[in-house]
Length: 260
Image (cartoon, rainbow, N blue to C red; front, side):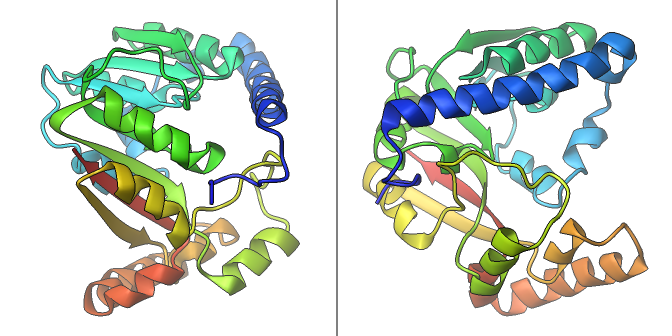
């Protein structure tokens, strides 16, 4: 089964994704017109904004002189961080609004990134173009049957990719996602968290697929302000997930590492 609702026509889904993210980018652009200095940031501003980002970036290994694809780059912060680490970054997105923001952010931070308008299910790159692949909250927007083949095709033999994705195996969390209000809840009609059966498409394409869960108890950070309680929950997670890896099934997010 694909990682998007089968009731949504493919063309309608792409159009909805473009419209939704272009509107988000437009709203953000108004802020940057008033405060262009907000485009500049330190690596830690991105690496620390969620608990899985820093370890996921670390899974990419040494990036000096490596060709990397930022798959669905959005606002482009990851592209900047990857370029600062010496990578030759190519970034694409379906949203022209987000591509414009990402280009402006790269310029503001003094890094070189190649930006391309593209659909993640039909990549406009030659076979074996990239040493590494990166994506954050993107695979659950696409048809993984198509996307997995494209990711395998553009990745060089011996290369690997790292993707951070919302996870949907926790029934209580899914209930909360559907019923409770929380910041940043907006989403498109065709998206939903990945589940275990979605990984079949990745495993059919790649020689290895590794899954690591993040935020079991600390998923409460979605509704709790930063506090000592939240810090304690994060420490409990580090202990519990190390001792009882089966709990990863019930986490909020997973980091997927795929190898060719």
